[in-house]
Length: 329
Image (tube, rainbow, N blue to C red; front, side, top):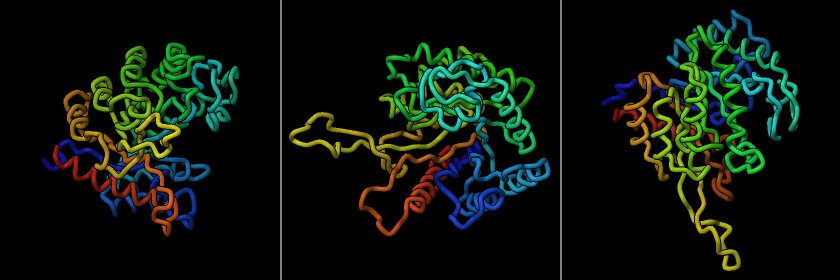
């Protein structure tokens, strides 16, 4: 059907990085937009390395014009969102986010004013850049910020998440920006959906990562039933099931584990998920679909290729395959 829904296939620039000799800031931004044109991509996340250190309105307007010329959708990350409610952190692992809001360890109370100032800056940037999607996940790729933390269970983490997202919703009221909350290797679709429902704002919806459900032992094809009605953007990720490389006669348990792979080599049914999004999402037309492979360089494989170049290769394969898939809709 030749992509009749006008899906904006794109990629994450932290995986398809500019070469090391390209200066950070506007030059890396230009290179990334040129890469979009080379491979047919139409959406990217605007990561910090693509921004000048002190962006002015003039610079941002120039960046917006360049993106418009290439027909590229920009997605922004408001990194301070989880400090908006001023609730004490319950777990470690907040890293740079904690630094930005003055909290780095359990019990620290984020500076809500600093968090709000950060989001206000992001809103102003988004309005100049013409970006209508914010994105962020809560989980930090560890057990402490997941449903498997018995000391800080989902019911308690949910209170923290909902409180902050309600503050985000208030800040976005009156704008055309939607905060797309990502399932980030932390909770299953039903749990994420319950958070969005409790926030109860059209400004807080879902960025559905097709593969992250599998990391928390859920079926991505089941999670989409919960998340599709709220989905405003998506990440493409594929996994395959392989024999556990650590399995031996002495340690025979856990015969299978997940492994990242080239798009299409795994078990995720992308056409089924996209159809569910088309059927249930509030507005699938023009939705940004970003390649985000979780495919580490195999040990001993492709020895002549460095890690960054390997990730560029994989991401380009993802974009190419995604462009094939969306042509069916």
